[in-house]
Length: 353
Image (cartoon, rainbow, N blue to C red; front, side, top):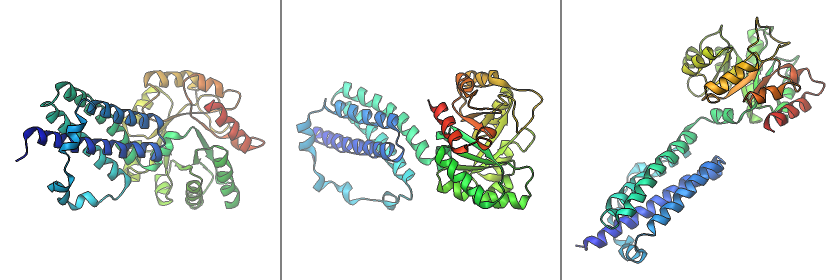
């Protein structure tokens, strides 16, 4: 039987290796998979702080206690250890490995150095926060990640023919439009379905999102990214039952009560307006920039992406930005411009400035 101190150091050594390896596994995904510099820095700092805490232990005793060849655990495995269907499974397994190893380090470390155990406890709590963030990002559908990055939203109609419809999406996606919403009250259901199916495929090739106005049935059957509804259409909660959890649901809001209701109903994003008088849709009254300012203040920017909409043009977009909004949805500002591509580029440049 080994000496108790040797056993403790052997456990500490193995757990330290598992913890640092697990943190590095997560750090690599944050860095190369999500391109998230802030989260990657948090994981890297966690790894460095763990290394610093381990410096309180006698490195010579840790190495002397290491005996991989006689470790009975190396020959024990389960089928689940070798099953990773997707990246999210890798992240979850790594997070669990880190948390369990830190707990082992904390408990056995108490018999060696109480201050070391305290430091590990602090690191364990920090790890919970880092892991929650990365697991949510890893399991989040690609559509939702793309939505979170989006700032420029464009409403389009069916166009005279398929060729011009395709060209519009490709050209404007390259110019900086993140989301296209098909809205054409004059089109037949058959045409809406055909354009939606085509638009969803083209937008996907361009790394853009494609949304259908009002019609959850068409959005689902055409494999679009989601549907946008107004206050007179189905609620976000009902639309979610039709579309499922993978697709996006957007809701138009005109006052703060509707904002809270849309979020409570599970909307993925909201449109806030009308901000200015619009040439494409009439309203009895304008919510104005005061509404945008209220949304920004009362909901801390909202826990959902929020797009200002209604009459937004190059000469008034600065007022939108001043109200705290950095996402806009437009129609005429791009579609009716002399050069829609340049108009899209300039609007995007302004809101990202």
